Image (cartoon, rainbow, N blue to C red; front, side):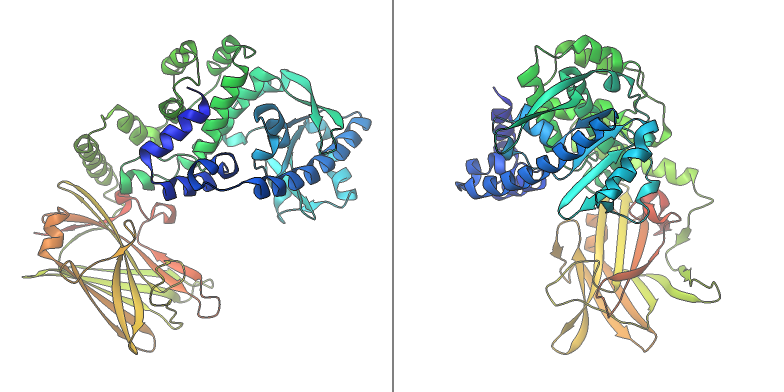
Length: 505
């Protein structure tokens, strides 16, 4: 089977037609494959992309030509270079900017040349970026690279920088020009390492593990994986796989590199030779404690029971290790959370949380300071545009995880609270959670009553882990301006290891 056949099989086997189309759009593959799902003529989309490509190729040709006259070495990659060497029809590939690397001794010279040409920084502090500097001019976007990959990922780039070739590019008028880029071996290695870089930054957010029991993947994973597999299919015999395997052994990978490769071959089983896979499986991966959950999940089988048990043990043990820093309470106790204002003299956001066990279940009351009440339209459940209480509940008697946003809504002239399941995108019925709302000039109060049925269903009878985010939106911008988070580290707002633990006995 070809790569195109494998990706089509993957989509129809795992997703509905609408889901497949959405995935293709999110992965910049819509132009290439939409006709297989939407029965739609792509000629207009391809023509628009052709105009965009032509516009950028002309800009790149002029810039690279000038750089060569400055006796400056460069390497151009991704973008239109991949379009022309990888796709039968280059205009089927969507790309956004012009990426090129210059050695450090040439960087300032090229940067100031671009400024004279009318380019300006995409971001005010963009020059401090250790990876690349984004520049723009009209509709043209450039990334002038200091390094090929972000330094945090710690990829040794020596092999890539040495394995170059001259490649002929054709523009829209069928005239050609020559660029310096990676050779076939370095190109596929760059594609693999680029996906690893994206995976590296995605790995810091473990939310998908707790919410859906799946390890996080890089944004546009399918797009990156497809181009790796497609390049291998097209240039398999020109790629020096021994050199690639040798370079792998000189890198310092974290364990999710292995998981990334496994995810690729799950969709494209012929993407790599067996010798490459054997090398990947034998690598000595960095013993980073941040990857403990990754390692555990990779050892777990596909059964949900195995993953659930693993998560329960992991959360319980890690929470206990942090116990002195975490909040430990019994039902009936309360918690006060405050967020200091900028001058540090008063609190600009606070929440008092009280709990009470009843015959019907568990009552939790949230009293939130508020002098700028902002709520969204009746059927709008965007958590970023409404004041409200975002409650995270995790159980480890048997694993459960709930993400519930309590939305104040105006209904028939009154403010009522709607409990919204943010994971399943649905409102919750009164037989599971009953919510009440009151408001004064300076605060509002949401009382959430969790039924015994809800507690039993989610295995919260003995104890529970509770996380909280208070959303504070502006009535002027209708967007979140502030938040109050229970977790010690704001970035871990979703992570049960940082939640408060309530003993239900």
